[in-house]
Length: 306
Ligand code: NCD
Image (tube, rainbow, N blue to C red; front, side, top):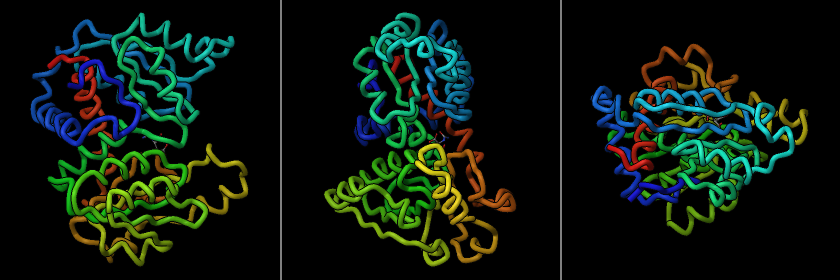
């Protein structure tokens, strides 16, 4: 039963519950018109203490496409946080105004903390470098629609695996399915956090770490490219040194499988050359479209309206 629940971490929901959301999302994708009035009279609150384009706008698009409304703010400067209001008070107040909250905050753990003060379901829409579970639903829906399955896949993650919260959430989610192999491609300084490796070991999932994309690209079914997370670096020099370490271009793709699926949570900076956009394997803009549908399905489930 997903009605009334929060979504803070990817593993708050069981495999069965994720599958339930995916099934609903696939129905929405087939016949969106059947859902255009499902949330009439319902209001989504978007509390974004950190900049966002895709996540906030796709939440807003999702509730509008369900016939509901949306209120909120897109930066802490335009909320009472700038007057010194605590996060707890903001959430206690806003949960009187809305039926469900989508919250993004630069601090790890903030959504979990905030959810204790909310009287309505709270959706973590990115908490610092920690997790981003609705991006994971987006990524999974794209995988479902392109590969038709969540198991038996070799999944490469490339770029900033240390600070990239979307990587952390998707790794956790995909490690719950059988026979997936993970290939983590990053410079030494931006490797996947130790706690995730321990989790993979505990679940007996197979994984390897690599430094060169060219060396491993040929074995991948999915390649998840990521941007180096500038805002989480402590010094500019390190960012500049690492930011262009991986650039996916047509030359590198020559060695890739013909049915590779290239994903990216976006925004892209330099890590995928624009020439790749015309390759049929490039799915990242389609992925952004699935983001609206995945969020529509999630909102419907949390509100218990179908
Ligand atoms: C991601 C994020 O905010 O973590 N973007 C998104 O939500 N689509 C990835 C990123 O910012 O690099």
